[in-house]
Length: 132
Image (cartoon, rainbow, N blue to C red; front, top):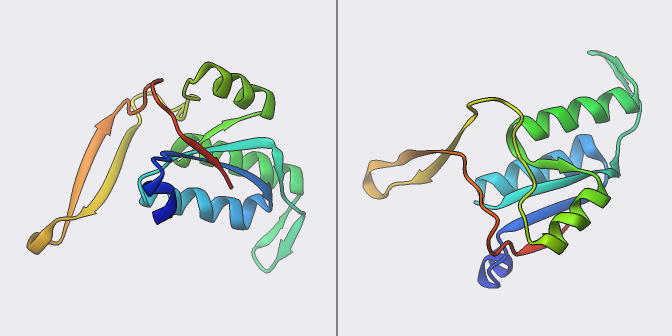
């Protein structure tokens, strides 16, 4: 991640397999590290899951995780929408929750953790994307 920061990359785009493991973990960690995150819904995937907690189909799991990611961790789009945003140098919409507030925890010297809150983060200028 230091390389990304050193090269002024501020946006991570996630593609690949599996939505419920690597993609979800990457989106959550990218937010902690201060990156804007995008995930391409038609370029990621899940599998059917069954365990002691229950069962879920790949399609239902993928849809549920796209809704979760869009509401808090990442901008979810299709590949076509992403290409359009890259060409226009614009930001994909991140949250569909009205009045959503984003919280970031940062180290605050001797005081320990401090919380910074910002509403409506984003902007269309100067996005530097990296596809993971």
